[in-house]
Length: 204
View 1 (cartoon, rainbow, N blue to C red):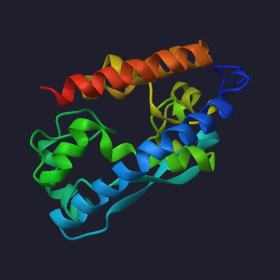
View 2: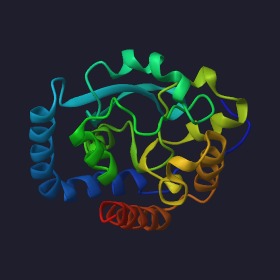
View 3: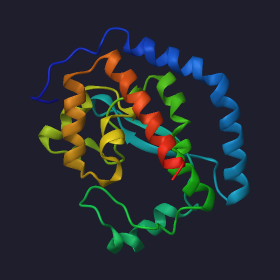
């Protein structure tokens, strides 16, 4: 698929992912229940949002998130395209009117991402890795496809270093740097930094 990288997933990474998810479940399950109730009470629509994302080797899979937008958010996207502040293929508008009240809190706290633990258990994702894109691999430039050599992650380097201020190409460079130095130790460091980043944003 790519000319960029020849790599081997660190031994034990998949086992590390599964173990981490299972250990976290007793804490996560009650939180999932509370968040699901808040989403249901806040606005009409499905509690969990399924979106097709691009994973390892270009495989398309359904990624799970708690719904943070109004039910017809995708249909409204075209009418808001003129407000997009990021270069294609990214899409972001300030104070997005499609985001619900509960959705703003879930995004700020990253709780909307919790259902992706089930994507990890299913093998479509890893806890740490490049974030899966909603657009198909056919839209990638050749050097972009290096990120498809590994499972996408719930979190990664750009979440702790760049967040939403980074362009797609800048995030790709962070992803490739992660892939080249992949290790369980690095994953643990990124997870700790992610938790610290979420706590700081929640306390703002």
